[in-house]
Amino acid sequence: MRPPALPRFEGGQRLQAISAGLGVLGLVATALGALLDVRRALFGYLFGFSYWLGLCLGALLLLAIFHATKARWPVVLRRALEVTASTAPLFLLLFIPLALGMRHLYPWVAPSLELGEEALHVLAHRRPYNNLPFFLARAALYFVTWGLVGHLLLRWSVRQDATGDLRWTSWQRRLGGGALPALALTFSFMTLDWMMSLEATWQSTVYGIYVFSGAFVGAIALMVVAGEATRQTQHFGSLLSPGHYHRLGTLMFAFICFWAYIAFAQLLLIWVAGLPAEVGWYRVRLRAGWGDVSLLLLLGHFVLPFGALLSRELKSRPRYLAIVALWMLAMHAVDVAWLLFPALSPERLAVPWTALTAW
Image 1 (cartoon, rainbow, N blue to C red):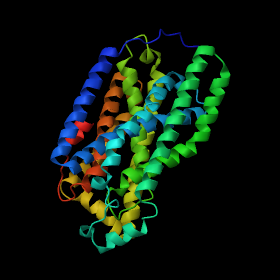
Image 2 (cartoon, helix red, strand yellow; image 1 turned 180 degrees about the vertical axis):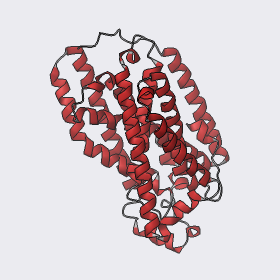
Image 3 (cartoon, rainbow, N blue to C red; image 1 turned 90 degrees about the vertical axis):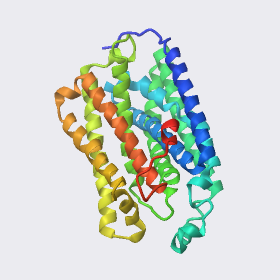
Image 4 (spheres, one colour; image 1 turned 180 degrees about the horizontal axis):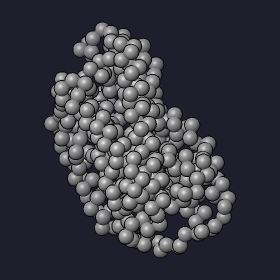
């Protein structure tokens, strides 16, 4: 049955202005933090950048998967996903501080003797890949891919709504399926370039899909929160039925399990191999301080939501599911912090205050 026509949404200006004002204040505070300690400020900025970019790309991948599988039930979610995914070009602008401060973040930009002879040897071996021109060229390719796919999916969707021509739906389905390999590769290489290379010698072939699994859970949770926030209006949330929430809850449950599986698989492979260049990454994160965060992730990102989402009734009740979704968004922030900040402070648990202002 065709859903009822909705009036064009004209509100949100006040909330948008408040959000923009808070964003400007946060960026100014982060810039002031850079005057005090540029390295710590940039790590905080990278945390906020990685968190929100992950949600944007998670939404883009979820949208592409829906089109590729020709799924009908998420039609009412389509515009929310499209608008979220279409923010990718904004991150090109937000990437500028990271590009300007690369030497403070990545040891391969300006290797020092403090890294040790072995690390310097590894970095010299990786120089054909980890060098400034190639790094920036890859970043440009990532943003062009994400921006182009997100823009076309939104543009064609708007045209389809305006004209009713099914040709635009067909084009979206073709692009969604055809772009998935490119989206997967650019997401994976992005995590290797901007997150994993914070530590000189460490590498993992599972890292990219681990980051993806967390961002994907976050994107699903974001759709649940958006739906609940607008459920009492005559707009997006009013179209979501208990069945929609149940399916979103089931997807969230599935990818929480997938996140836990990938996290365990990476730990198991590194633990069994026992290579000094690899186990150090986990040694830092399993010590006192960061070890407590690891335990929090185990319980908060898997055990608790796993138990909660086993309930069919909870998944069909928007308010309760939104509470779980908000919790998962918070746990995703903890997960991103756990990935990034031990590279800044391996000796003890320390999170720069610019992480909050940049976020």
